[in-house]
Structure formats: C-alpha cells, structure tokens
Length: 137
Image (tube, rainbow, N blue to C red; front, side, top):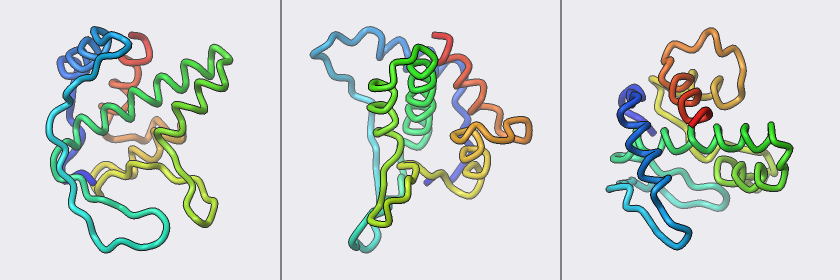
C-alpha cells in the first residue's frame, strides 16, 4: 500500500484524535481524500492499492489496535471483537488476514507491530510511538 515510510508524529496524532473526540454520536468526519487503484477483480479478497491517504489510514489502524487492546484489558470481549473485525477478515480459505498491508518499506515492521511480535527489532518506531500515545489518550 504505502510508497513511503509511515511518518506521522504527535501533532498529527493529536489533531486526528481531537477531531474524533469532538464528534457527536450522529456526526461524521471528513478524513480527506483516499484514492485507490484496483487491479483485476476475482473471487475472494481483492486488494486495492492505496495511492493517497496512506498516513491517515495507517494511523487509523494504529488507533483501532490501541482501542482493541484497551477493551481486551477491560475484558470487554464483544467490543474488542467488533473492533478487530475492522482490522481483519477471512478469505474463502478461512485464514484471518489483515485488511491493511503496507508497502515494502514498512510492512515488515507493521506486521510485527500488529502481531505484538519482536517489537524491539522494529525500525520505524512511529508505529509504537503512535500506539503508545493513542492507547493512553
């Protein structure tokens, strides 16, 4: 998905989080343009290449992971599963897959981050920094 490293920092996390916090129950929020390219469609999960909106989309998945982990800690399994359904899906093979896969630059780190595996080896610390900020907010 991503052609450059995920680079959003505290200013962008604060702006996004504050925008979301200000929303009322029936409100919506314009996140900006998201532009995708589609390849051939087939049976099962079809991948889209995200051309514009990578930073926002990646940050929103980090926020969803933070919320999922927080509800898990609070033993709110039903809410956690609902949030996880926004992050993961099963294909025809019934294998659980992430809905967002980053480009070659960040995907190895992003995969470790999303699985909570080998976090000390992650080169792009923005995933962990963003998660820590959003988890505490």
